[in-house]
Image 1 (cartoon, rainbow, N blue to C red):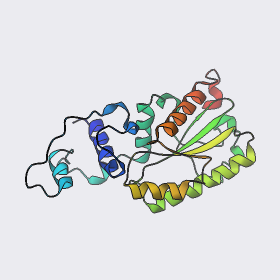
Image 2: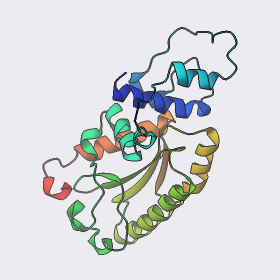
Image 3: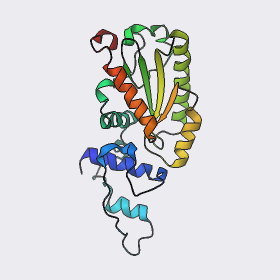
Image 4: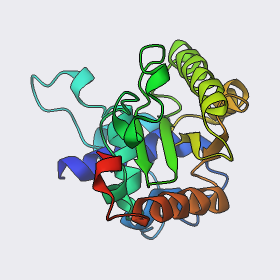
Length: 224
């Protein structure tokens, strides 16, 4: 199994608790998964999860440290962008207010922590903060909530007609309780909270990234 396949398998495993049905692949996982014919567990297996971890999911190589196995939040986000064909439009490095987007937000450059990813055109800026339920703990979520609310407040004060927006997008992962907690903590912090497991929300986000990323492509100085 390749590293990418192993990573995708772990994403599915961490999200099983959020699925309502198992006869179709959740659309949030993109085109990389297909269902096989159902198979029965061997007779006598009492802990299905333990059996799957031992015999089906990728196993750790000798000497491999657990901390290096799980991809970070940004890696999960990049996989999502790649799956839906918009990775070319999203900047992987954090948004630098002092110079990015023509420096129009440089007045707050020293007051706010960077936002993880972003895309921009001459007229529009979309700041993107990913969340992976189950991978980030409550303290991480609170930090994201505080940071994004601070950005939203400054953006609203410095720009008009939503020229700039900040979006929190919730990726696949975590048990149902994790996802409910994330939504409760973040629903009013950004301009928009998007759950990519919901097809209409996901489609709107992907279309928005593509539209902004394709606009004004002849103006690279503004995009940095």
